[in-house]
Image (cartoon, rainbow, N blue to C red):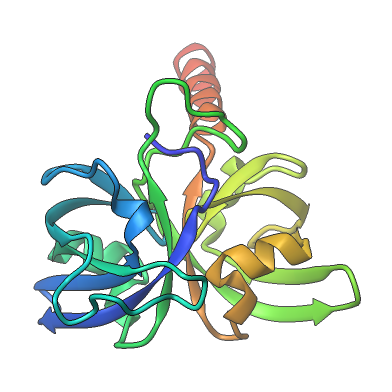
Length: 219
């Protein structure tokens, strides 16, 4: 379980395998690996992945920093074909930055909304409009998902908990503040990129329940 509040950005240092199975290696500030264990869950671009190996400060990176005075660690994940097919992870390459969030622990402040890390689809960026204090991003998504994406509702985009702006039959807008652009990889996203989408689970459950009720009682 996650909150949708991205903690940092990690950098892809290796991504080996094929479109059926790949091992992803990320470089990240060591502080984000404190108290980590093999088998733990971390959201990478919103995708819940299981840690298979990690080093808080590898021999290669020992003493190096992220530019903020932090040593660099590494963490690895194995990614199966279904996850590669349903998400944008297959498009990753060495040097790409990904959103990174450790799973919720007892006492964690819930600043976003409950996110499972189970991506349902991807959305394509069709337009980006920037101003001094705002960035408006337009996303196109398969129309079947729009009944769960509501104006002023929650949606997880690349693992970041965001509020939905205006919607159409097959698209929606996001208004991103400078802090979100700085802390996540959404700040480097471009028109044509595909972003991972997880709809709000409460909205999903409500819509599905109502539709099932109506179908049972009204044929």
